[in-house]
Image (cartoon, rainbow over all chains, first blue to last red; front, side):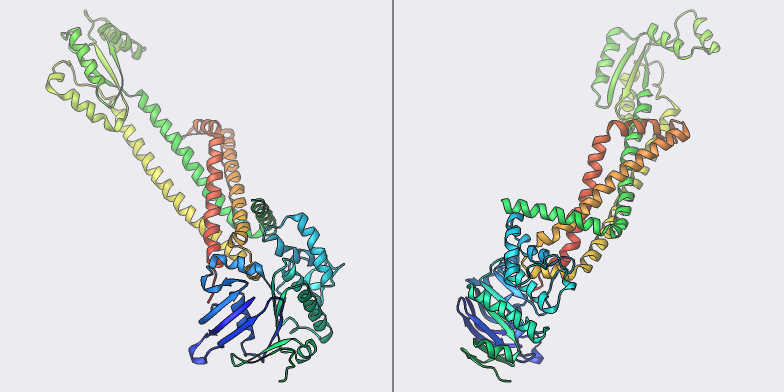
Length: 227
Length: 314
């Protein structure tokens, strides 16, 4: 589902590479946690996957799409296949909960009838039923993040990338968000989660890829994480 | 196909909503667009009116060729048919001595001195005359040259008359009209450029305010056309509104001038004709204004958004 082959990314030659010949293979329906301290390269890795960045060298293939052959005008098509949850939520401030989630469907031309049918179901999955009319600023951090997750999964992507989705949340809300991600994974979506929350990693008991100074320091199934 | 239709509908809807939300920001763009379109419209109307005025004067101009009394009918006929071959000749009228006399009497009716000079003469002193109307006053020399040829000149009793002083007046009017048209064209170009720049600016400000939203749309996989579309729709609405306003301004100006002046002309500009021409060509002018407004709006918004919507994949 996700294949990275000796991928490097260098922003500034003097500072050295942010990612140094990373190789990673994620199977369909897998739940992979990428851990590492700040500056380890987690965010760079995700930005490469969403094509916000281009690798300096190496090969990336996601869902059968070879990034070497991807033209700029096809980037929107790629992003429609990947659901992304951001640490800072990135919700549209002028739209309410329902509209924020519906927006992801509107941009791909889904008919209104289908949107009215799908959005409530997804809001139910992330436990936001009854809060459709709320504006983002009226929600708690955890609720905002769940709106972001609903928006990421409403198009039923095969891959969900979550960049530190619990980074801005207290432990209770963080755990709510993780439970939603687990639920989505059970429905068959491949999940790639980055975090530096030790407690979450250890409770989840999933495959853990540890990044250190831009390199894969370890890649273990059902692993614990120690700083 | 159905999805494209839905997306198109959403783009128009979003553009209309954005227009209503950003109406205060759009006032500047609309104001400049109205000025530009009004100048364009005024230039078009003035141009048509000048052309009409010149045509009216031109129609009154003719070249009179005076024949010898000794010329035979065949010679006169030959001359008329050869003149008809000249490209700048619009029409030709042959007046026999008797017809020419009648015309002279009619033209000078009331001028007793001239009339008595003619009527007291024992024979008709007015020569048979050929009246030539030219197509283009500026090319009158072609006819003049032809009439100066020795064999043609031999058939004439006097030098031809070129409507005397009026020719000079016409030259002046034509010169003034050309100058005005050039000034108008420059003004239209300058205002169109200023208008486009202000619209760029307005849209760029709108985009700047909504750059986060655009980033989110990008990350969610919105196509460039889906992000740009509403901005273009918004600018098209500016264009349509401005076109309608410019037509209303000119229309009000005609109503005001006809009420206030009660005069049919203002210098070279025949207001009553201009007003009539405006009324007769209203639909054409409205279409022209709408096209210009939509075009300015579309082009400027497409260019303005291009800068912000490029994929910056590093």
